[in-house]
Length: 136
Image 1 (cartoon, rainbow, N blue to C red):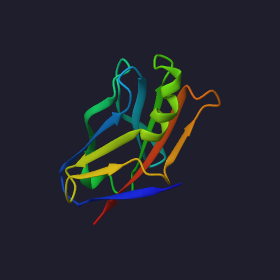
Image 2 (cartoon, rainbow, N blue to C red):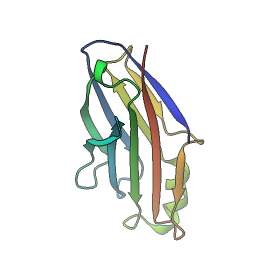
Image 3 (cartoon, helix red, strand yellow):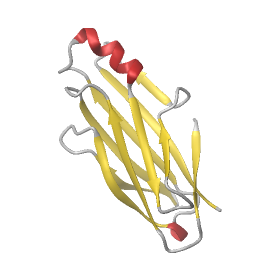
Image 4 (cartoon, rainbow, N blue to C red):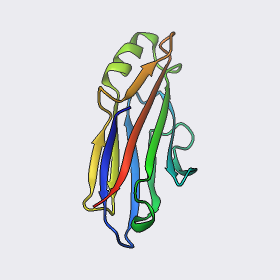
């Protein structure tokens, strides 16, 4: 499991996340952000109606988030995309995870070492990104 770290400070700053999923326009996307902290899971934000993004969503107050783990899941459904384009959709999928309110505004990418696979038929792509909120 590849985990990147986002630096937050011990203050009352509001921390935010937004996610942009760049793929074929005809693809339907289901994505959500969950925060795992103190043995609890909290839904922070999600895509709506197959949209390719999760709008800017509040994660919470910095001094209450130390060592929280963000888990961002996305499922890209390609059934409405021409089948001959599915492999290119998989290869060229780009996801940006933007965090702000911490030490600095920072953008992360879906990387080759992150969790990314396609279904046996190729019609679905599943990704998972982990971001640790690390107090500095």
